Image 1 (tube, protein in one colour):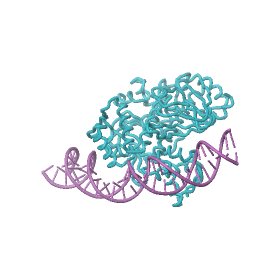
Image 2 (spheres, chains in turn brown, blue, green, purple):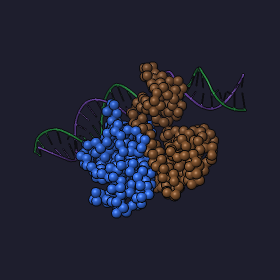
Image 3 (cartoon, helix red, strand yellow):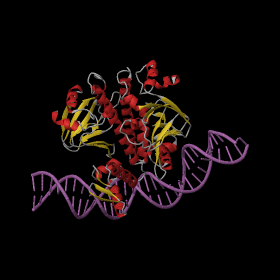
Image 4 (spheres, chains in turn brown, purple, cyan, orange):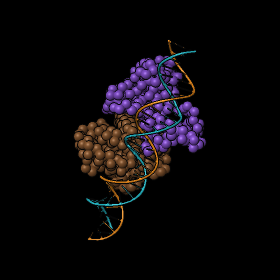
Length: 219
Length: 219
DNA sequence: TCTGTTTCGTTGTAAAAACAACCGACTTGA
DNA sequence: TCAAGTCGGTTGTTTTTACAACGAAACAGA
């Protein structure tokens, strides 16, 4: 466990909690660790889960394949980020998405009930963790609304511009890298890959942007 | 305040908290009430807010108009539901949407900092409220993911079927009413109203569904 | 009752997206 | 180093959507 403290202290869930305290809390929260190979599923659609999870190593996609095989990528989880939190809370139904490792990954599981109900005052940082949890879920909520914003554009170009300009803003630079290859970006924005590729090249020819692989510059 | 207790006790935020205790908490949480006329804005895009709000009377839309005048409806808030919670938490940026009353409405405001940080043990139901808050935000989160699911369909028909079948499931009946008129539904699904109207009629002619105004039956 | 407004279906046209198929550049690994 | 697989761009065709415009029905208010 100890070797993951450095990662955990940078997460939203354990913000403003000291190293020693985090270590003490892991037991209190019933934390467990598991590794997954590239391509392995961490959760399946339809599952009921009671774990909040934090990614310690690797990379994970939250996605969904519909009846006709169209894949839609909801979110990409990077090291230190949380997932599953919305489906772990009491009263939530089954998972609506698959969660799959796209690199060899390590994941830490927390029983959500122990976060929400056990020893709210006995463990001195417990209430801070709950506070952090509220903020983290809120943030996830905002990023979902942002994604709805990209997807509500009627055209492929509109979706691309909405996403790319938001990404530039987030990274405080008109030059930035995106965490997707072309197929993944298309699945993320729910558009056809070739049509998207086409549109990107058109925009490049019009001088709106420059790109090379997954590195983009808005001009 | 007293007359709103009946509504508040049915909300997610005050679940499992008794009438008397709710009344006592309103002061502790610094609750205030304000009324809005139909068409009035409760919050504007770009605002910074620190209030969690509960709708006591009326009806509210969370929406956004883009540069070209395309309106996109994120969510419809009914009596007893909460809004603004994702943008009220510390560290969140400005509001990404407008919040507008589409009927004469009454809203209760709670200072989020007083929920999250004041008297976590002094007030005996405070921690229960925080627990409720986590669950409520999670639920909002899931409904956003569900909406992403509708919108990730490539076709208008796919979006309609995804939304309508989900609504049927939610209301436990193949006959149900939706809370939107045609234009609002189109804005909610980010499609053209006339194209959507067209598609609905085609589906009706194919025997997939029946509808009359905002009452639908899937067959 | 008259009038203006909202709502919803319908139509035709132009634009855009999906789809399928293919190619070349690169990477991987046996 | 050869073969297979991945990735991204390109092209042409078909389907779908957006857009604009109109009309009928229902409704609200003076």
